Length: 80
Image (cartoon, rainbow, N blue to C red; front, top):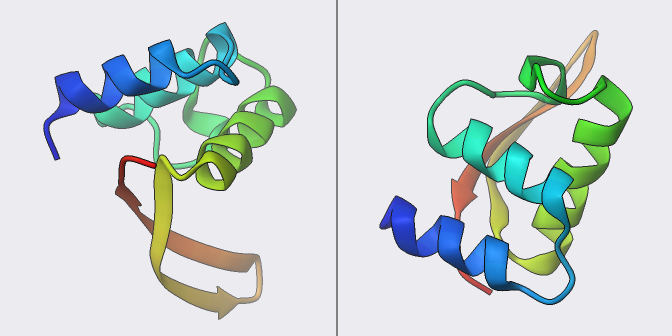
């Protein structure tokens, strides 16, 4: 996935807001692997953006595993 194209698509999507772009940028640059890793946002806000980006089709779970702390997902960057 071309990161510039992906970030542009996220930023230009009519249903995304600045928080979603912050999360997308953090994911694309490798700074965020989970909502708590997004320094610019509180964890709940970042978690909402992770979920919203997945619902919009920008993130796709390609692998998930359950463990004692919950479910962990490997996400792929995708275009809706």
